Image (cartoon, rainbow, N blue to C red; front, side, top):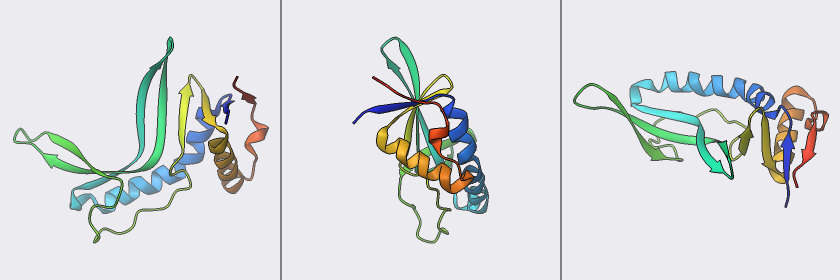
Length: 138
């Protein structure tokens, strides 16, 4: 399976994701008193060859917010499953499970992720990602 570079794809993907991110932030405001927080994106930086790439993973990452003695907030990761069954279900997002590598303004994705992003774009903006400059990585 190959990879696909989407020229200027970072901005496009983040714009497509914005309405879902807003819904998740609104959800977090509603559950604030529970002490839990749902983080919708996990970012990792890796050195690949002579480049530093950013990897973005879309999903559900649950944290518990705890106050230390010094009144500083500490975030404790509690998993990918809803930690308290009494919490309302979080909003759904079609981006869950998608991971992209960011190289400047481009993204590099597997062919399967490209297909998934293409379907998301067609649903949200009724446009095909093929309209973007997509160049096969070698």
